Amino acid sequence: MSTPALLSPLQIGPLTARNRLWLPPMCMYSAQEHDGVATDWHVLHYGTRAVGGFGTVIVEATAVTPEGRLSEFDLGLWDDAQIEGHRRIVAAIHDGGALAGVQLGHGGRKAGTPPWRPDAAGARAGTLQGWDLVAPSAIAYPSEGHAVPRELDEAGIARLVEAFAQAARRAAAAGYDLIEIHGAHGYLLHEFLSPLSNTRSDAFGGDESGRRRFPLQVVAAVRHAIDDAGSSAGTIDGAEAGAPRALGIRLSATDWAEGGLTGQDTARFAVELAAAGVDAIHVSTGGNVPGTVPVGPGYQVPYAAQARAALAASVADGGPGAGVIVVAVGVIDSAAQAEAILTAGDADAIAAGRPALRDPYLPVRWAHELGVNDWREAGLPVQYWRGAWR
Ligand code: FNR
Image 1 (cartoon, rainbow, N blue to C red):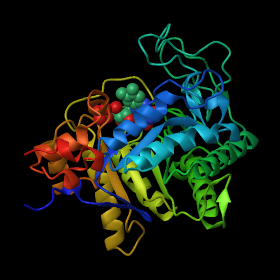
Image 2: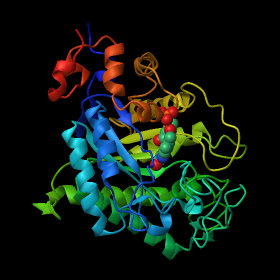
Image 3: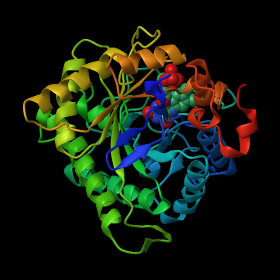
Image 4: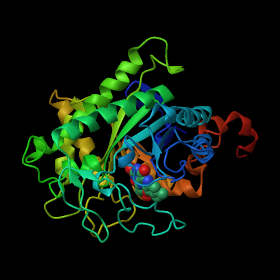
């Protein structure tokens, strides 16, 4: 039997993951309150999913500034004191045999909302009191209880570009293999990209190229920071320097709204991102304005396919995009479905989030469902080889 596509190795820039399954970033709202420092929960949660067979584990949205947090319980990388906790998470993920990634983000006008946890008072009920919200334009997220953000000036934009670069430097120091920039779900980068939230008339707004300026500056600064960390000799704060690292970005391909971003806009942007040095494009949708989203099995996959086709067309024309991978996500919850997406050529990798909250061994189970019973091929750790199927 040939190896299922899902279990074949995945090249991400300079790195190789053991298979094509990603754990997508999912906020745990379990950092130490106020200081954004990781706790044992993170080590346990991410380490378990690595042991469970994921090839790539992306740690949740991690804030590049305190005001960029989505809640007081978010992880951060705005301070060197936060590196040590991430180092422990990375060690646990590596022990489980997976590549370790972290999503760096800023919540923009959607920062400072109570955690989406049923045990949190006022879960998902608007902006927390006193939060200093910043955004491309002074337009509140159009839903009850959300405060009007301050419009960023050019100095504020430059400070945030630098904050992303510094957070990326710390992520490299913590040993992460992959840095994923959060450009989706109505947070700061997405707010710049979308005409629904960016009505600026300066160089950072207006047409497509103006709206892309800040996100592309962030991409360039983060690429530079991680390449710099990779080329410096010795160690950075005790972590291995000189290690090659990959750069990813998560996008909301469509705003699912009249006048908003479309799959075509995003497919074109994917090519521009490839030229800017991005190795992986993780295709989600929505989050910038409320509305009806046709959620169902694989509902975002056509957007991943569209971006992948644009990259392939660019390469065929001698343009950028060679080696850039596309990750599909969203209600992909069976092995057969995941395998079919890969064999159809709609994506290079599959992220499965909520199914992995129910079952940390999802990849091992999916391997078995695809007919792989050998413990090594299925991704069972050596310690568990006796648990293999007979
Ligand atoms: C998420 N999601 C998410 N997305 C993101 O880009 N950064 C994040 O930190 C989070 N946080 C988060 C927390 C929780 C509890 C859930 C359930 C989801 C979205 C997530 O990565 C994924 O895109 C969606 O869950 C859809 O994929 P699944 O769950 O259908 O496989």
